[in-house]
Image (cartoon, rainbow, N blue to C red; front, side):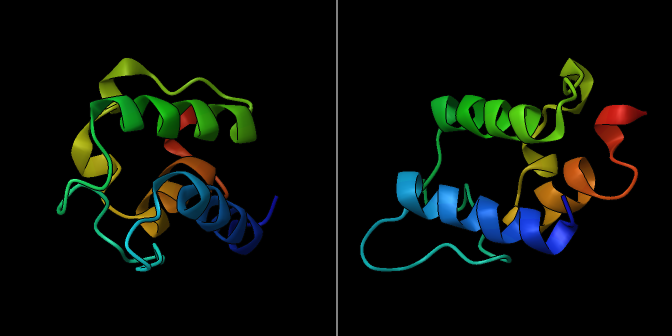
Length: 86
């Protein structure tokens, strides 16, 4: 899956689960800043990324700073050579 396609699919998924108050989640939305996503939400994020990438994200990479924005998540974990594969 191309990164642009992955980002579009990811934004659709995020908005269907975590969208609130009529403010859509966009590629540069800070996911944790306004409490939109909590610790359980992180588990859902990780599960989605793993299912799409087909790779397990190592525990050492499951850090809030790696999941700040949708674009950062896609770049880090679904890019051409994702960190999950390293």
